[in-house]
Length: 427
Image 1 (tube, one colour):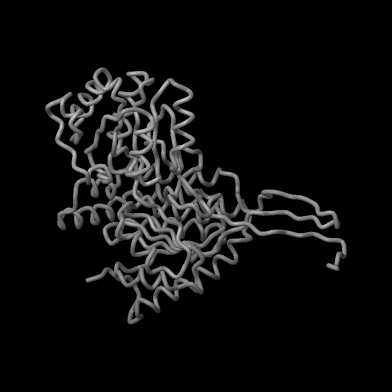
Image 2 (cartoon, rainbow, N blue to C red):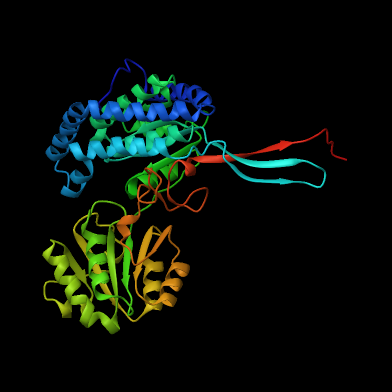
């Protein structure tokens, strides 16, 4: 049975429609709200989150217990579980977003025409954004705060697994909005776990301007197939680390281990390691040993298996799998060209890294790898809006329209043209 809060005899369509109407009204006011008001809302929400830490953790404990009862994987539980430190990180993230420059009203470009018209391209909010996500409770805080900063109203539809956690976090955001004199309906949680609510949200083109899904393949596929609203997609994170022949051995070992094992359940975790054949005999064994000692299961091609008997044979499916767990595919490649071919064939255009001291090889990799984020001599775990100085992120967009890579406040704006004349008429 679905968890439902205060919806009485409303149908799911009626419920979501009511949220949409309220969000549209809130968005109109939020679009012209001052930076001071928006920042006050975010800072007050951070204070509320700290003050309600015990309630948030209690709600999260209920979510985790339900997930464990349902036999959910350890990797999924890790994404779901909150701690006092993670709650503090959410609160600090709200404050970071508050300190960011307000993107709304920023003049992107300005020019004058020969006829004297003065034309400016200026950032404005998108409007109402529907965010559909799965188990991560922190997405509630990140998405709500970024939408607020960019002057957008948000309708949040988190997964059933994080329902209680999200409700507490949303309440903190609502408290902040109210304290700043802004409508609490600017950030709303869909108060039901009924899957029909997703369909209702995807059909609500009169009230919602953009859908942002964040989750697994099945969620993204459903949203892309059913939505009547433009979708900003966040696909799999099949991320690669390529150890080039010119790599520094210690950097290669440290980056490979961190990219996989720092936190295996995030989308920026490396899923495949590629190593040049010319250095595989010297560089790969220490990397394999460090990974396996850290608890990673390694699945490799025949050349990798020959270097370490603990390596499990990789299948064709492994090269295109996002494990989100302590599992890594390893392949020995002939050189840069084969590495580029492998990434183009199996990657998800999310995040890929090269480790090398060869500037020409690094430049070629950064140029030819068609991913939202490409790195040189750095871990793929830096694929994160916070690490990019955006305060937080809704996710990593693998789309090609509007926004790509970390989606922060600036990426949640669009623009309009402000044209100033002195009485011109067109002949």
